[in-house]
Length: 405
Image 1: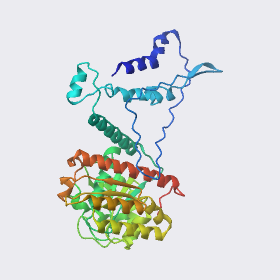
Image 2 (image 1 turned 120 degrees about the horizontal axis):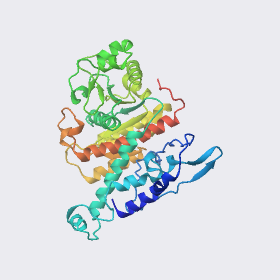
Image 3 (image 1 turned 180 degrees about the horizontal axis):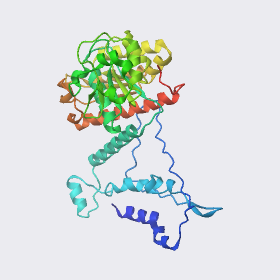
């Protein structure tokens, strides 16, 4: 901790030296902590607000007001670091050594000897990335809603990474939030969700649809899931099943929403099918996986146009769409990448998140969140933060806080 941090801490708690001169009354009132507001975003685009690296912590003086019935009241909730108030910047500042000094590499070694060596551009960039990552995780962890919310993952073009996106996005949400995330297959026929997920469950989506009227507890519902090491629960197909209908999707979704805070839906390739229409009716945010290829982007744009043409909730879903661009290792060029970005922006996609190539995804086997490269996980965390912000916008603007179906 720097000398400045020490001085600031003494300034905040300097009154503690005089505490023995006073006697506290049982009637002393301490104001409860006030909720903190999340940073606002512009048009749903991912917005990161890293703290300035060179800024000195701002100490807000404690305001004391006398009360008619007794001792003065101190609003510790808004000033004390113990309650996450404005002095909480001291905690953040104490987690890092003096930001004006280098801490890594040869420059860090010189700084450790007491020389006034500042951080390199690379170290500053790494610090900013870490601050952004921390901000993204905080956004995901602390978001709340007054009802269960849902994410629909779809691109009519096959092979664009719908299932890996659903599993890893849902896994990141569950890992950061400590669970309460269900990842559900909503394709007409059995898809690859159960194959790509961890575990080998005995029961799945087909059996859940069959028994849906008998599922009334979280313990009963758990029997149809595949628990993941990310703390997500996957409900896929364990074998052949009847073709899924829109009514079945709605019925299963309503039961899941009784016991899970977030539902992520892995859909099929037929946007005109009954199952897909059912999924649209119970979705809050649309996530579109794309590749750096013309067909995946053009079909994604066509999907957005069809949803907007349908109007109502479908149009709202299109207007909150977020794209996730995966790389499968095939040769790519900058011209195609730029054209993909231009087309998605022109189509009104709110945010585009790039996922770097990761062999664990490209192997097309079971996906485990812990097996991802750090850069891949960070990219999914950033995408998850965008999804969470879109979910908050969707719920706050909904005409009712009840489930849509």
